[in-house]
Length: 546
Ligand code: OOB
Image 1 (cartoon, protein in one colour):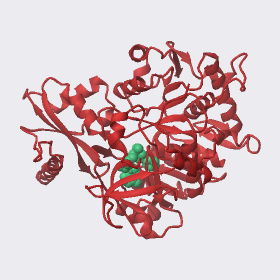
Image 2 (tube, rainbow, N blue to C red; image 1 turned 90 degrees about the vertical axis):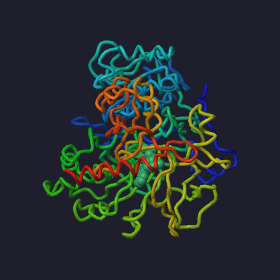
Image 3 (cartoon, rainbow, N blue to C red; image 1 turned 120 degrees about the horizontal axis):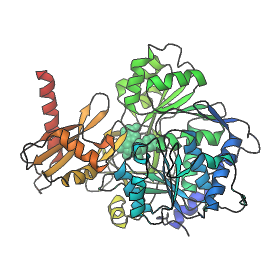
Image 4 (cartoon, helix red, strand yellow; image 1 turned 180 degrees about the horizontal axis):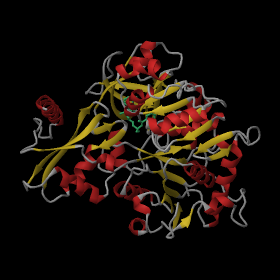
């Protein structure tokens, strides 16, 4: 049984193979390749726990044997939700070994997101943590089971009695199962699912094949000059495409370096870890960089080993970009990527202009970039337009979403990223805006339509539009413009309502404006441009008055 996905057209697939991008290796090769030569090298540090490459391989095989023993086979899917702990990688590699494709939900995800993933994927196994409020008892697990009758197996990290303990499954292999019994999926098939930031009503899943993802990991490790001496601090959510593969922990494992896990990207958490473990590289979103810059002078000597800090996920201002070297003492690398595929990096030997002013250039010479105007025609170099892309590691279709895929791709199979960019003569991209209906809250993506749909289920709300508003730290925050039937409905009640539905906390509107009527465009659509201007005026007035 194989997992359905939209394949690349054969001529392109042939080209990607011939050029060596698609190597025909399964993703788990990232750790198994070290067993002959570097099994004893330090791979992962999580708190006081240290894992060598041999340990990653052995422990993930133990879990793989249990997954096999309970009857799970290649072609199945899994729901995984774990915080930044070593088990995240052990589980990931175990699932890859037996050919079960996981979706790795963010730990900040809540009922709404998990229900949507489970509904779409129909996983047979869920691996979750009792640290998460949803899994303190089995009530929510039963709700998931109700929408997914095949979800028979629950493995729980942490203390709770209602499911099998995950940690026990690492202790020893299952009886009568050996590594020759199980098999990963074929390298040209789906390895796992990435999460789309989304701009539609339901969160979309991105099938990633072994071939395409492994290429992006190898090429990223090379561009970022990762080697056995690299000590990478993973401070963003481990499942995010940036911290997983750009080059992320997988790039570091591939190159034989060491990954150190941080629970969160705050300076208070990260600076002592950098100091203690001699961290050389890390990846951050712009709001975290702002906080690091504020804290750095109070911690002299803590960051001396740090040589590169990557910043991506949202636009980094030039002003911040220029402060990184003098104040943190390390080099900046800008990263503009997406879970759907395309990743751009400024190169470590770029001049200052490219490093400060651009968001980098694509990984591959076979990443095809199209920048078009509203009529869909290519714009001249240097002019802004909508970014479309296709290439050896950019997906060709969201999971089981034929209708949405019709509009998400153009006739030639280029993915419409929803970003508005300019390309320099030197081939670098500058992100200037967005034409997708999404709020980028400091790297966390909110699909406006998803939250609007949730709010429209409230009996007192007659209409709603979610737009971004500028924020000095987060870059953007979210603002809901609401028309209501009941004048007593408050912003607090509305947020409470969303929380009761189980929407992830970061998606709750930061600000609510009640309004008599939502402005419309000449064709009768809600005029979000006008609303974005309106909230800026309101905020500006409030600042002036205070
Ligand atoms: C990364 O991935 P996603 O899937 O969470 O978000 C992708 C979107 C992009 O389409 C763009 O709108 C925005 O996030 N974005 C940036 C950016 N990096 C991402 N906007 C401006 N400047 C940047 N440097 O965010 C992601 C995936 C892999 C590597 C890095 C980031």
